[in-house]
Image 1 (cartoon, rainbow, N blue to C red):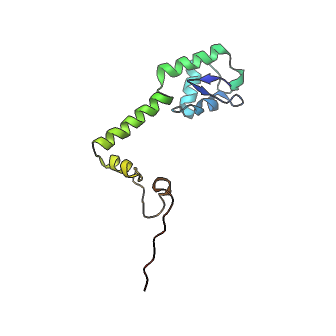
Image 2 (tube, rainbow, N blue to C red):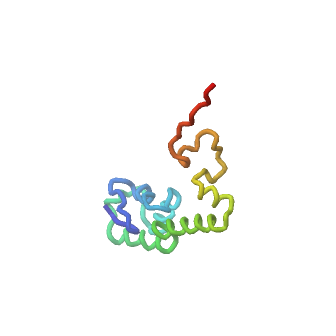
Image 3 (cartoon, helix red, strand yellow):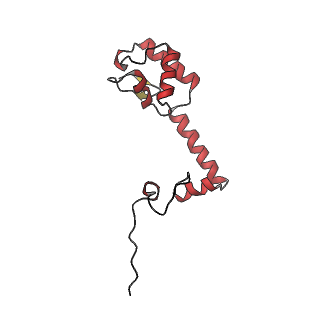
Length: 122
């Protein structure tokens, strides 16, 4: 298993797919990285030489924000929204959907499991 940016990428997958296992790299970015490093995207990750792995690492370090630094940046952005009490920050603080979804039904991922409410007695 090659190790890139502190992540063990799966050896049995193609390079362009294996790179998407790194936080912050999607399919399009993976193809850009392969192109920048001069590597065929269809090559299996286990067939990469040490030189190719180092070229991929260099391209990622120079062009992308990934893993810990990206996670930290996202968390700082959320904290900033909470501090200035913007609408999105308040939604984050309350644990509700942030991007305009309805909450009367659904929204169980953000709100957690449903809690039973007692019915009125006649």
